[in-house]
Length: 264
Image (cartoon, rainbow, N blue to C red):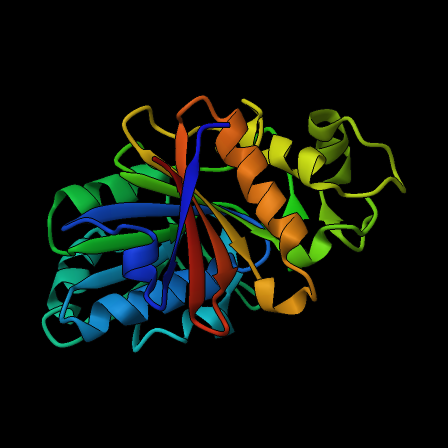
C-alpha cells in the first residue's frame, strides 16, 4: 500500500471533509443513524439548513431526534412545506409516513434528487439501507438505494465485530456476506475478510454514483481494547481500493473522536 497519513479530529465535518453543499448517502451497519444525526447536529449548529431522510425505513423514535419532522404523505406540496419549515429550523427529518410497525417510511430516491436540486437545503443526509442494528452487513439485490445526486457515500461498519464469528447475531444478510468475503458460517471476521465488503463491486459501495466521493467509516472504536486490528482493516481498505476510497475514518461517534487515514 502507498504510505497513509493519520490525523485526529473531534469534528465529523472535518473528518469527512464535508464540502460547501453535499448530498450524503450513508450505507452499511454499525451506526448509520447515529452518524446521520451527529453530522446533522454539527451542521445545524453552524447555521446550515439540513434535511435528514431515508430511502428505506427508520424507527420513528430515531426520526424524532430531529427538531422537526415532516411527513409528506401523498401531498404534492411537501417540498414547499420543507422549504417553509427550514426557515425556522436548522434541521428537519423528512419521511413519507409512520407505519404500524413504528417505523418511518422513506422517500423515493428521485424525490430526494428533486429536493436537493431545488436548493432549499444546504445538506441532505440520507440513510440508504438497513442493518437491523447489527455491526456488519452486505447489501441485498435491492439495496442500497442511493440517489443519483449524491455527492458523498459513507459506508459504515462496527469494528467491535472484528475477531468475532460469521453468525446471524453479528452479521446482517450473512449469505451475502459469505459470497463477498469467502467466509463460511462460524469462521472469524478478520480485517482482510471485512475489507472485501468495502472493496467488492457488490459490497457496501454498490450503486454509488461515479461522481460521488467514497469514505469508509469504522465506528465504535471505543468498544475494542486494542485498535491494532481496526487499523489493519483501515489499511486493507486503502491498500485495496485502487484509489476509489482515499479516506478511512476510524473512531467513535459516541465519544466524538475520529482518526483519519488517507493516501498521501
